[in-house]
Length: 131
Image (cartoon, one colour):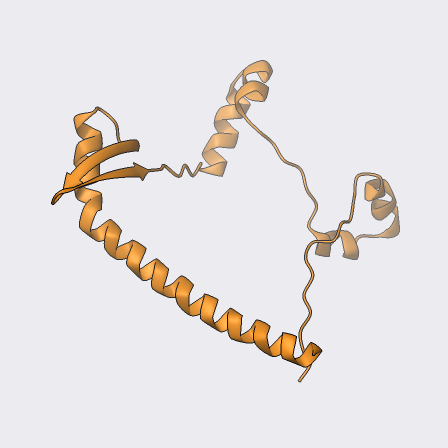
């Protein structure tokens, strides 16, 4: 029974992987065909991103172009440092972390200092047949 489950899982992983690849290809082709028309419709509404409706052939489509913002970390840090502390705290977000490999290699006194700040949880679980 357990071997059959592992075999079935592997079959499903293969099928899912193939379907994800095919879906990605189809999505890219859809984008290649309609993105230009969708962007034109958005620009006609005075927008670069967002949701719009277009007609293609005899069908009506609803399309969304989402934006992905990437901040230049060095420039952003400099700009936030040049602001008042209140504005920098309001607009900026700072996340502190310690790389696990550095923590593991740290001297005992550093580890002791950081210990109360550290929580370890289960990240993920995997179970594979060892062949």
